[in-house]
Image (tube, rainbow, N blue to C red; front, side, top):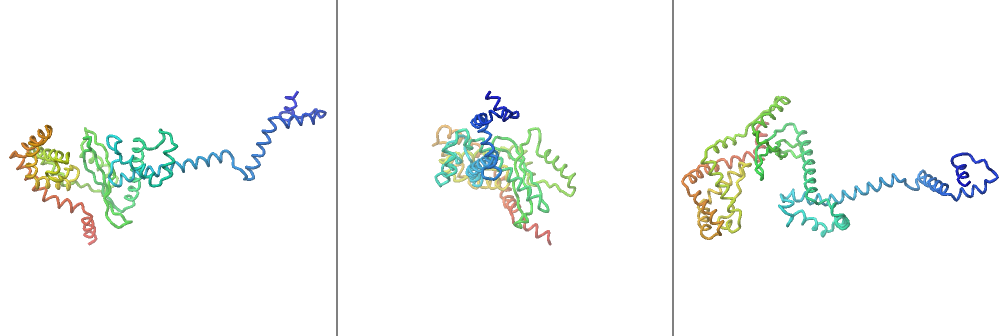
Length: 361
């Protein structure tokens, strides 16, 4: 009976008017009626802007959550950028004394309340500071910088692409790409690094650049390809004496840079960088200038060092004092001393300004 009376008010017309008051009271106390009244009041409040809908409240909560997460990421990203801007590694082989891990508590101690609250209440699997997240943040920053550089370069009247081969710490050959262009915003010629591209072992840099040059020439017929003349010096590496001498110099520099005790004996030896001609020439020049000190230091370490140091010092001593190495070193050092100032001038900003003024004349 009760169900039929509820249905009469909801699903079909009410006709038993003798029972109207009793049925109406029963309907007013039913859950159906109370739910309907509540929903209608909510509807009226939303329509009159007195309250917000569930969807609006959900969207507001989502916006607040996004803003909160962005504030957390800003603090974390700032630590990543600090390391990048100061040439500091975020971490080493392990997290022991990692710069990134030390910067985070430093920011908290400096008053970063957002970061403090984040670390206090966040689960360990959502801290946004893992190695994977650090790498993702670096990739995002690199992408933003490349896009910004690309827009600036494309807005310049002319630009050139610089490509060169280098080798990373894992021994993989990389194609380094840079762009030289005139920045109208600050009225200077700029040279900016764009990134690395791994070279497959079966391909040489000449092949890759050759194909790239062909594609560019088809689209921009006025584009000109210029080979870096300093690379002709690589032909000297075909000589076993030169190749072995360069390898010995690198080995000797690494030996003395690997220990403070050894470094004290000869002072600071600049690491030999194959990717930069000016740095390579400077490194060879300094090694040649300190040649006698290096030989004397090797003799001392052969007598006073530990077992491993004695063995390595003796091997280097025998190689460095051989007539073939001494003659080759002097030849390499002579042309390095002549080419070092030339490469420095060609890479300087003043050279670009001089070229620009010369063209204007």
